[in-house]
Image 1 (cartoon, one colour):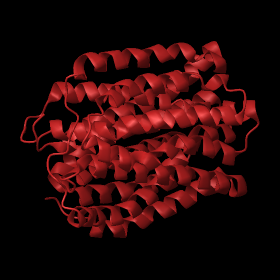
Image 2 (cartoon, one colour; image 1 turned 30 degrees about the vertical axis):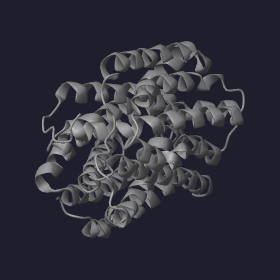
Image 3 (cartoon, one colour; image 1 turned 90 degrees about the vertical axis):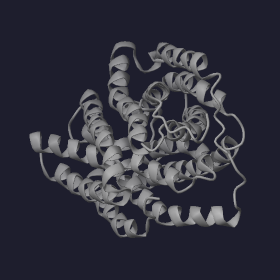
Length: 382
């Protein structure tokens, strides 16, 4: 795949977006099943937060994976990641204790890392100048997965029990088979010229110093809602199905937000699009906490549409300003996203144990607004 290829390769982009969907359906099982896992293994909310965090731990190796992906063909990692993620996530209900569950989720985290680092770089190379649109398609796969994943999880658990999830692994195995048939001849190497040493890392600093603060503030809101929303609904008098439905509504709104934000950022600019999201998300979280019924439902939709729409915009921004080593830059972005989100989830669990989830959600929205001044330091489109 030549770097001079300016075509929008719709078929390949669709296939990788579908693989993103199938892969992330399985990782979306954890949050809606967390109340059952907490009950089965007698865990605190802090330990519950650590379950979400351990999936993110292997992201520490993302820059190394990115460095390799710029130079070595990692296509088989991308091809077989859906299979391994499906197998381990389908077996979490069989874990007999907290430490076995941690090990299984850590192995899932490795599979998540080796998929998410090379795949967006390939998407960017297939997009020509329409990177925002392509990233939106790719991220729609992930957001749709997090929309239907909770519903699949709670439906199957209601039918088969927590230990009966294992048959769903075969969909992930089939997806890896399809990827193998279609991508085995595709070159995943993105490295084309020798990086210019300090100049490359100077460019990285220009992007990632302000972006790290934006990701951290967003991660606090994102972690609070995605990891603990079903638990929050259950604690407020709902049931497991209602909690899963609330999470699916939140994620479904994110699909719409992702579809709009990527193309909008191609036209309006990355920083301005991020500003719209980071103003809207805290406001909708406040509204969600202060209302009931229809207004609370609409606030959850607004929170999902604004909060979850930021990822394709940030991915496009990183790819535009890291042309010499795009996979390594993407690895750094993924590492920052996963590490900050996982650490925030643990911190959210600690706050929730001390102050309750309701108060913790207020804190998350307030911290989310701190990202706005950092947008002025992001580089402009090249």
